[in-house]
Amino acid sequence: MTLLEQFDKNEQSLLALWAAECAKRVLPLFERARPKDDRPRKALIAGRRWARTGVFKMAAIREASLDAHAAARDAIDDDAARCAARAAGQAVATAHVPQHAFGAAYYALRAVAAADPARAKPRMVRELRWQSGRLPPGLKKRWRDWQSRRLPKDLKEIWRDFSKQPRQTKEQMSPKCRNPV
Image (spheres, rainbow, N blue to C red):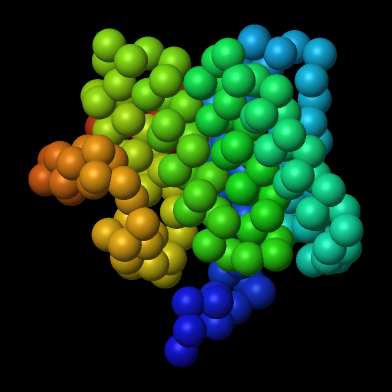
């Protein structure tokens, strides 16, 4: 089985919704820096629409993704905003290739780190915990596999630290963390 064949349409829809939530959590970083630019937000809307309806119009998905990535290029002076826009572009691209969902999560982690470099590591661990906790259980092994193959060295260190920490139960999480944004 090839990497592109391992997700059925239901799993792909679940990944798209998860990716959109990952990107939505960091979208304010982009919107504060570029309040008049709604391209990343529109990309998330397009991705969610596809996940809900299953209607796939490649031209619309491609345009929304490319527009979000163009917004990222325009945010050259703000790393957090740039990564947040890239997260949105990857999230909508999940309609085309399921693995783009993992790219959305990756860029969301990068946005969190860029937003507060002095506290990047603990914030990334917290975000990674949130991401992993929201991913449907049947997809978690694929997420871990992707991370082991694709994460850059600096994020692999954070992933190792995260993997060693005990998991919080739902009761231990704050109510804000239990509910998707």
